[in-house]
Image (cartoon, rainbow, N blue to C red):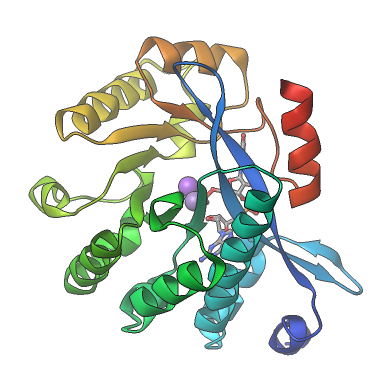
Length: 253
Ligand code: G
Ligand code: G
Ligand code: MN
Ligand code: NA
């Protein structure tokens, strides 16, 4: 209850920030983008994971406001990086409520324009479960975002139940394989079969495929062997503040 009340004031008190986790291109090993992940620096509890407060925000009607802040902050950060000569694709996570919000597409379009960022530099991740929940809202929002040039990714793919016929009609660019399959790659024949099938499915539908939660060299090698396009996980880098990302990427070169 206390946390819920604190959450109401977190934005105005400047306690929210975005951390960025690199995505690595499977072909050349270079950074090909980052995922923006929301962090709440609570005055007493320290860093609170969105796994805790996103659910609270959804329950108490704060998620659209938070999501709008993420859109604005990600665009502001891309503009700041651009001034330093760095152009990098940023992925943001879109919640169920945002997907149903009729003003989402216009809001994103305006934020991009205000900061002078091309739409193709922004990627929106929507989980498979959310995308399948309300197919009408998904189709409408995906079409709107694709029309303005924003890239779309189906997050946590394999954890829900997709209608493949429906998936085929969505203007998504990539599938992001759920972390649970990646976790079991080295020990489970079944996990390898699922990941291999998802990569083949994605490529057959002309979609890119990203693996998240890559934690070991063994997982990386299996994923590269399977022609996975992009990799993300602690093996490469943890989510980090924008300034740390800059230092990290300079160290990589
Ligand atoms: O970064 P971390 O592993 O703690 O994130 C936990 C969960 O919160 C993940 O499922 C992630 O997708 C989600 N999440 C992180 N940032 C955002 C955000 O800005 N918006 C939404 N809707 N979810 C987020
Ligand atoms: O898909 P989603 O947006 O939920 O994924 C982002 C979440 O995954 C974030 O909370 C991030 O901190 C977490 N994460 C990123 N890399 C790894 C990893 O290698 N292992 C695990 N367990 N979690 C990871
Ligand atoms: Mn995500
Ligand atoms: Na994910």
